[in-house]
Length: 465
Image (cartoon, rainbow, N blue to C red):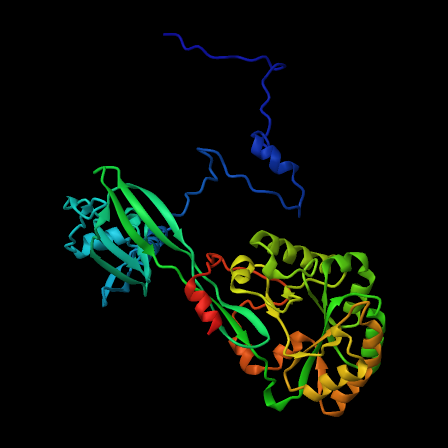
């Protein structure tokens, strides 16, 4: 076989270039780099000569295991905390229960054998021996509705009682009759106030919806009687304190009375008629600005004994409102001009008055006996704790202007201090302790659930005793 060779022309002979290291792309890149410069190093591709085998982290499995263990411990602590036991008192004994257990769960876990109550007709005959409450439970002294037992959760320290169910009555219609509380008036003195508020009783007739039976259940709630206390005032510690009071204010003589009181440094209480206050509001406001107490004689100064219940309520309410509107401030202190406020008056309007105050030393000035006689009556007959009655009217204005300075001087010389009715009451420590909660001479309030009383024969007997 002939041997074939390749021949070249001497002129076209192929030339082989010297490998300078930049034939491959990487080589060209290296050639372009400058000496001393820093460049990012690229990881060679697959199959490259510079590929390095990654080092295997021999500690990674242990770290994973440690994290997993920590998570399990955390989860276990949460489960333990959510289901930990707490101590409660059950029927007088200490027991442990899972926290947030319910009354229903407690009954199931303790396997309590409870007997349900009976379902009764309105006449107490048995309709169903097991139709009453399934059980009776209390939590910290409060009854628990059996229907709410599953939602009533327990906490550490709770006191629980669980007993057999109570009998219940069939659904029934109720016809109720209110029983008004009786009224008792006790004591004696110039200050009268409500010591105990009355609460109405209740009498019921039931008609069963299942049995159809009608039964008179009698008195299902006894009434609570109202008590009005009448007290004298005895300043504590032997203090010689009296209250000077004026009826039927304001009048043409009011300014002169205020000037005398200011000059002598004495305080007084003015009982204002509502219609007079409407006619001369400036005088009423001046009384209050001078630091004296403003109270009410009613609106028209009517005798309460001559008024019906509704008329009396209007007389009182309008009188108090007129004082306030005239600038005398709010008041619930009332004095009837007749000095009488009967048991029936209390029954009709005790919710409108904070107190009724009369007097125990009558100057008699309204009879116009003359200034000398008025001074002698007051200064000669005074005792500590007295409420002195005087009059602020057009008829008595001249006589009062002449007598009042001498009265104040005579009382002061005898060691007496002239104060308002409120301050006189406050001076009696024993009386202050006896006054009921909520006693207020500025605003009358009847407690929630209280009821106006009814005058009975017993009330009349107690008042006259």
